[in-house]
Length: 392
Image (cartoon, rainbow, N blue to C red; front, side, top):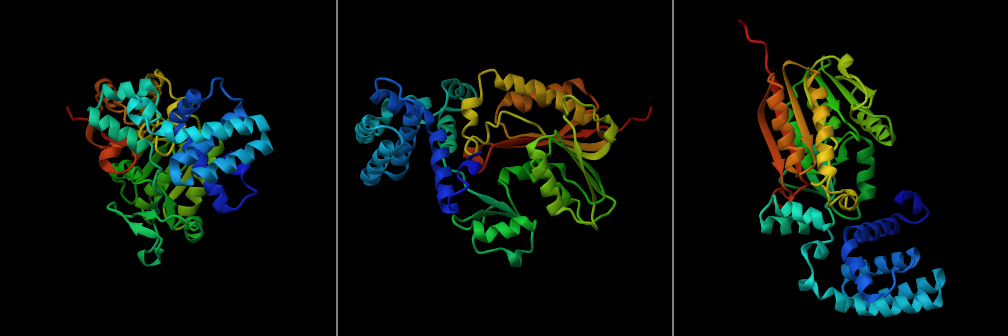
């Protein structure tokens, strides 16, 4: 929707609009706290939006840019709103620098723009210094990573190596250079945390692989490439009908090789539909829908949409999906359950409960990422093996 609303402006202007928009969402609680302290009555939506954007821009650029920001915002208020409201914008923005200095008076939730219930929840799980490190991490503008799939000699200079193999940072202002490589399937915009689940599954050439909740396709592409050129292998990617399925289809086509493994796209809602007809597979990946609490840096709106009971609700859904995924695994096969959540209820609790109720499956290994420790998004992945029948 954001891209649709700014489609008539240049790419540089579009990126700056996105920076401002996401910045306001990321720092919304602190910004609104400043407005509420300086304005007796809550401004109407258009005026509130202008103040929010202006205050974030002041937070991002610092006091040196204050006069420019104030002049521009007052001019916009005169053009879009009224002379009276323009006067209010001028008065409020000139007081903002003083308000930004009183950080020590704020709670953690106010300072780092998170709901109090979320901060309190993490305080019950992690050490105090870890909680603040997580809150700081979530407020950062995320780095753009490229997973390189082409020949190393073709790697453009704008992609800089990281400590994670095949993952590179994309330097700002280089979309023009990287776009044709993305279209050709030689690169994919993907955080290094996404490697944990596919690497844990250890797909081998010639295997049959089922990827559930596959959209938008980053992990599917990873699995497909791991299958190599063996024509005996196959990848079945499943997700529910909707806008994301088009992106999944596009990504599969980019990385699909006519002389390699067979690729099938299945449209099905796993919660409502039976998937037993798909058969049994050597390897199954379930990248389950989750709270996204490990990727709040990239999805800052999520922290405002989540509610205190959201985690328990997601856990119930994940348990249902894991049982369905396990039914598609052949004896001796491997299953990875993964989320981009850092909540124990969505990870360890789901896995332990499943293992306790389904004795055919053995937990072999797991990988976890806590963002402030790993340096990339949060994620968890758990590897199960379905036991073969024991001879009597």
